Length: 180
Image (cartoon, rainbow, N blue to C red; front, side, top):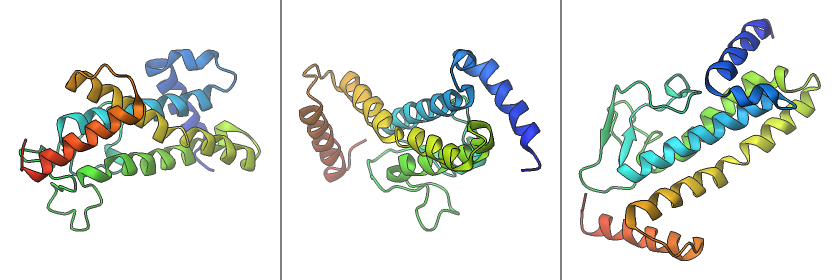
């Protein structure tokens, strides 16, 4: 509550620098939240296409610009292991390869909490707006994930269910045979 002015200043800066189209939206801060959610969904989907494991993907290592930051403990898998961890401090697998979409959403939820006072003066309305935006993450992620795999595997069927099943079967083969 005491940092509302600072959060607004920072949000305005992020909008101007990274998402200028949000300035003309009915609610620029909701547009900012939606833009950051989309950027993170696409970034994490890209990580999943190349076997990148961000070893400590906590909130301070998540960028509103949709870029990978803090390359401390990170790695690219040599052998496909869906639940592969990389950081020696991640004993519980919080930041495992397979959990990256989940952790991205968790981090985005913390970001949304910071924006609540900017979304709407009425806290219930602000929470509803934030939740509605956050609910888009899985769809945005799935779309980016499938689009990337279609490109990578030269799939042109454009049938979401068939292509997704093919990709999952492909990943299962990588896992079963210990492939890169």
